[in-house]
Image 1: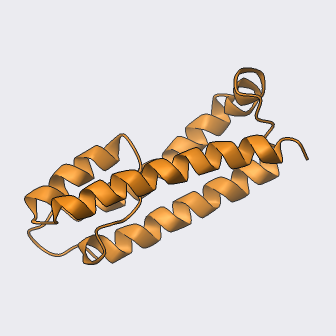
Image 2: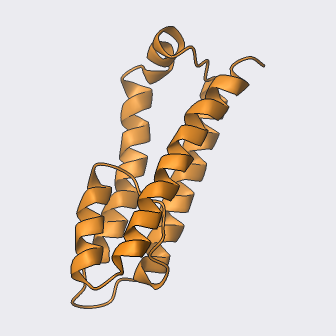
Length: 119
C-alpha cells in the first residue's frame, strides 16, 4: 500500500480509472466505433479479457508504487501520478522511461488489435 505522506495513492486512482474507462468504452459503444473508424474488430470476449489484463496490470503497478517507478501508467490520471512521483523524488529519468514504455504499450495494443481483427 502507499507510504504515508507520499502521493503513491494516485497510482490506485490510475488503476481504478482503467476499470472505469473500460466500462465507459463498453457502455458507450467503443467496439462499433473502433470497427468503423479504426478498422479494429474487437469481439466482446476479447475486449473483456484485454481490459481485464490492463486493469490487473494497473493494480499490480499501484501495489509496487514508487519502489519501481518505471511503471506503465494510464492517462489522464497518470499525468497526475507523474507529478506526484517527481514531487516525491522519483528520478526524472525513470519518469521519462515510464512515458516511453507507456507509449510503446499503447501503440502495441492498437497494432495488435488491428492485426487480430484479421482473424
